[in-house]
Length: 523
Image (tube, rainbow, N blue to C red; front, side, top):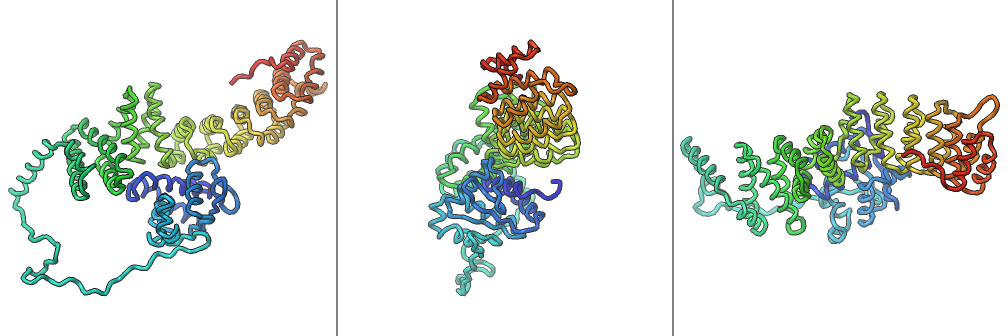
């Protein structure tokens, strides 16, 4: 991470933490890592973070932030359901409190209402350094009993308490060897179907035992290179976790943690490779679900495979998996975007653009100003796929780039967004631009946007200029096409005048534009 994050970036991370808490148990490595990083960002911010729940999302210090982020929209909607109008994260709020806060917000409103409302639920959860609607949340006081401890039963040996183990046996080396042999034979003959039935339908203690035995089977298989069977156990555990989402959230959390403990780097890379080779949607869906449950650990192998893949089907499979991870809030590629190696950053920007990562524009604010022209070009290409006001603002930075080809690419991207807010800056840039290719792209972008404010400046370009400053013919022809795209009486009047121009190409272009038959600009 290079330097403190901006407030919008911190808000996005907070919202992603909420999305993660909706899917991952609070002790899952992916969620705990995200919470620790969020705590670090807030410490670097150095001040309380004041958030207002606005109709369009979240506002920080009176300005709506990250309005296009689905994570921010979802967090704002859930806060509004809980009756939250203002949320303040005080300085030095700990990751533990952040996790409890986001987990409580992720609960259904009826559950929180039954607990006495969100502030009461947060207080009961032990949240501190958080304000809700101007009220500081204080952790609930601990209940301390003055009852004396239970006495020792008559005749019981010293050191024993009711419910404790009756005796402890010291094993010899031979005893331990026999136990290891017994465990190995048991693992080899385990009935996995029976264990899964226990996991789904047994009592709490039976579920815990079944999960321990399934985890032991998977670990034993990995140690002996039985990858197929280990992946099979993981896939089945993922299916069981999905089935427990409503029936037993606690069991689901245990299953996901067991999956996280089982999956080492080797098995993750094997699953990613199989995802690229899969040829049926059922197989791909099962592998995607297992990778999703593992969380952030799978991002780097997926990215590496996507970069190296030449097969279109494999690329699509890796892309879909990354999109699914992004959907639940798993941070994608953040550290790589800040990498010192230009080619790493360029690849990551390209991937963020390819999968249309929900909050990628926050990272593009840095890469659009990167020192390497190749990174800036990749950023402009990615921004052109997004659209929206945030992308427009970054593309306007690209229109002022020192490299002419990048200015042209940024103008093309602005035309594809068709954002009216870009018209004024494009007109201003057109007056200062000296590169003909960029001028053509700016003119073309103004036509694509179709705003009547551009008619006058386009008419000047289409007319051919003055005796001492002639407008190149390609620019004139593009301006005529742009006037035809904009339409309206003012544009048609300019086109009628151009039908009498001395240049035959200009006259023909004006006729076509007035009839709506202008040659379409290149995509």
